[in-house]
Image (tube, rainbow, N blue to C red; front, side):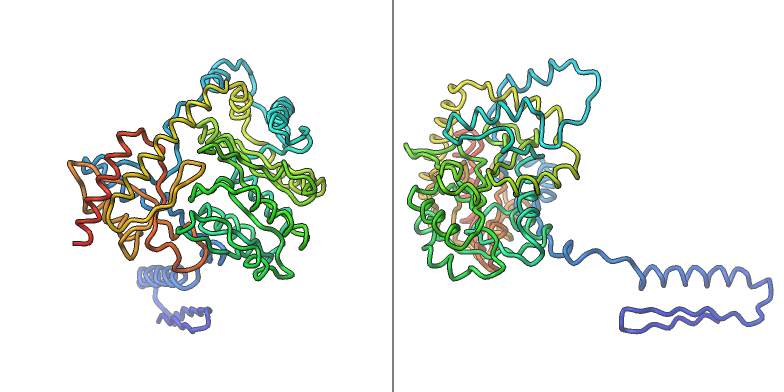
Length: 440
């Protein structure tokens, strides 16, 4: 006789009663045993963390299975969803790795190779940051630098204020670090400019540790003005907060506007933590090399503990990143010119589509467009599963994942203009026809 007793309070009791069973019933016992095993597997299983459950999916990558299925059907996809530039990586970086003659691929220093940090400091000093190699910790991409920063300045339950929409992975980094994101909304009507400082002050509590900005912005392309940076400086000093600035897109500033780094602002030395990366500047996304920069020695010493825990950033990638610093200015001039042309074509064509509203980015290579649909998650998936124009379709990033406030951005998408100009024109035409078909 097999008795399986269960309760509803997350505990399961299983009792196996065998009363004077003869040997010829051994098969029955084996069967009963298998039932017991199944019961244990069904009712008593190890559980994943609540943090893991809360970890958001990437709005950029979650549609990949649908894109792969479309490609398998022979559909060509214009990928506007991910910030992977089609610009060639500087040959200096590629050749440095090709020509390496090391016999042992060893660890580097936990803060990164000294030679790389020295040259990196010299690069920043050309734009008046007054840094030394001791102010720099090399990280595995800008992502790790952000995790180091949050881990160094925040305890579980502490808060970071972030203007939204923002780089989607900020939500993930905050979840992984036990940090609470306090979003402050910006509006497409004014190109996602910084909200009034009084709105920030409404969100500041005794658990607020920092304000995080992305400048120029991902996904908006917004470039902060001198006045906005001055206001943020006064705010963090007034409330004794850190100012984290993700400056991965620093070189991509358009229309004669200049990027202002938090490391250029006098009096902010103890408050400023800068995040940077080689991914976009040199079209080296796969290198996974970034850095955390601060003049606050306590922040650096704390971040160094996290750096030591992961041992070192990748050695080959540091070699490539160091060589990339020799890239001539002509490379950047051509890249900026190309992105301006792409932006202008994209924005002009998007504005021709009925019901579409789009912000005009002043930097980076993204824009946010508002579409005449209720839910762009559904629309983006529909385009991959059910729509094609002459055997082609597009893949975009639904913008809801770039917000923290539930329900925000449901009718918006982020477009990365990282395709050559003719492809961008075709992609916008496909979007126009897709919206007509979808809304019909």
